[in-house]
Length: 180
Image (cartoon, rainbow, N blue to C red; front, side, top):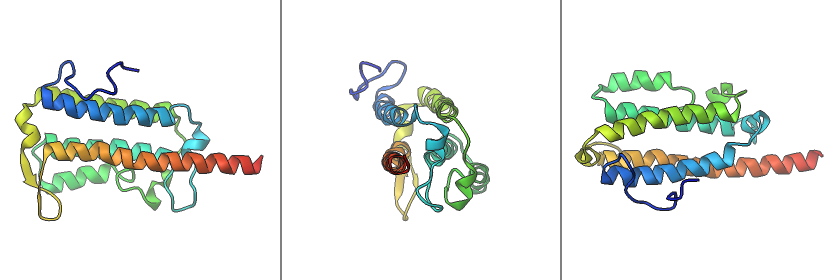
């Protein structure tokens, strides 16, 4: 574990405000990894009921969300291009019934995918000027949003769903106890 994981501060190779954002993103990701790195395929694929997400589905969702935000914020693309790209990230992006096909992978596969996507994010963060974080565009509910908020939302979504992961793990364990 990085000695500075609990410090939100400047990081090597990042401009100041990107450092702060990356510090928060790193902590969120570390805690996700700690929750899932030793899970079996059975645990990753377990669903509380037929309409529920599995942990594997949620991990694929984290990756899809980060990829769509890369497209939304790093590229100057039309709404149609974003929609086409979003379609390519389904069913992980939206989850739901269609996402039940996301199964059968080892934890390491999900974590490698997440790591590669995060590496691309950080590579781009290193290239961008800090002013980029504060660029505003039309966003949700007729309000403006800046890139800092958009990337906050990426890891905030992960934190929110990590709560689901913890709940799924507890229910799985309880079910296993009951069966044994």
